[in-house]
Amino acid sequence: MLIGRQAIVVGAGIGGLAAALSLAQRGASVTVLEQAPALAEAGAGIQISPNGTAVLEALGLGAALGGIGQPLAALRMRDFARGRDILRMNVATAKYRHPWLLAHRADLLAALESAARAAGVRIETGAVVAGLVGGGRTGVSLEDGREFRAGVVIAADGARSRLRPLIDPAPDPAFRRQVAWRALLPAAPGAAPEVQLIVGPGRHLVRYPLRGGRLVNFVAVLERPDWAAETWQQQDDPAHLQAAFARFPEEITAELARLETAHLWGLFRRPAARRWVQGRVALLGDAAHATLPFLAQGAVMALEDAWVLGESLAGSDGVEAGLALYEARRRARCRRIVAAADRNALAYHLALPGLRQAAHAGLRLGERLRPGLALSQFDWLYRHDVTRS
Ligand SMILES: Cc1cc2nc3c(=O)[nH]c(=O)nc-3n(C[C@H](O)[C@H](O)[C@H](O)COP(=O)(O)OP(=O)(O)OC[C@H]3O[C@@H](n4cnc5c(N)ncnc54)[C@H](O)[C@@H]3O)c2cc1C
Image: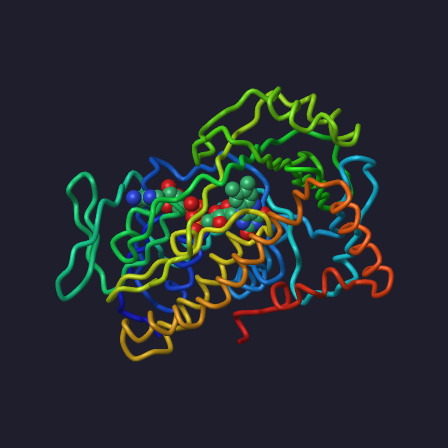
């Protein structure tokens, strides 16, 4: 166990809070340093697949899952032109051991924060970490000049991590010539808890209900050469989103027409870190392996990391050995997930009509011959449970 050990976690995102909880539950005294002046999530949807809820349950959040999100019933893949289903993957009958949740990020973060605080985690907001400090114990320096020391530092400071270049120098991220709009729309409650993935040439749109249907969540991705910053702070005129998806099914364009705001995010490519650990410092979540959002696994990977980190440190003699074990247990799986998301980026946006129709016909046929095939191809992902392996 980690009783008496001190840990610093940089970043109070999903990865950082889950890591803090995982370490604190094993006895560590944990301080989370978050740059934001307060823990506040602008708000949007997030899918937590069963490999992620397995971790939430193991962290003691099983009873809270009902307040975090609603179980997903089905994943529908549709073609933009006629709107008809290419595939309907029945998640309810796939009988996963853990639920697949459609959650509001703010609800997930609030549950993690409250569990972390209850486990004794200290959270310092307005703490902008500037670098690492060394010595017999490790630590971090803040922009305001303060220093925090501990036996281990976990850098969960996101895709634009300030600590990652100190551990794994990497080339500058490259703009993918793709942007994502994110928007929420108030709705009448009671909508079927299903994810719709509607694909078209050079673009796709994901739509699902949140909070029992009182909100509809949209993520709309478009290939375009115009650069966009990698931040949700950036508001965009919804007319741009509406124009890009004007040829999508009518019920979707009608919903998009009601949007008053949309946020724009530029998609950037970052190779996964070649090295996750240096001495007593380790990367976690997007800081280690940011992914394109085409498989809905970024936050789920961060949850898996958090569990494995706690288990590896608690089960090893010494911090260095524990962190090395953590990296060894996570590296190959995260690379595989990131590669699968990259493949989806290509498959969703097929531009040549003949190629698109052939690909969709192949998917339909496969599902007709072997119902459940499309989903079962991802058993390696969704049925994996890091808390039991
Ligand atoms: C459009 C879109 C849709 C997505 N949908 C899904 C989905 O459905 N399912 C899923 O699993 N994933 C999804 N993701 C990915 C997911 O959002 C991320 O992978 C996940 O949030 C990463 O969590 P994290 O804790 O590693 O990093 P972050 O959430 O980025 O958190 C990092 C934290 O560190 C703080 N920080 C940064 N620098 C410093 C510093 N110097 N000092 C102190 N604090 C600092 C930040 O303020 C932030 O709070 C999606 C992503 C996008 C773009």
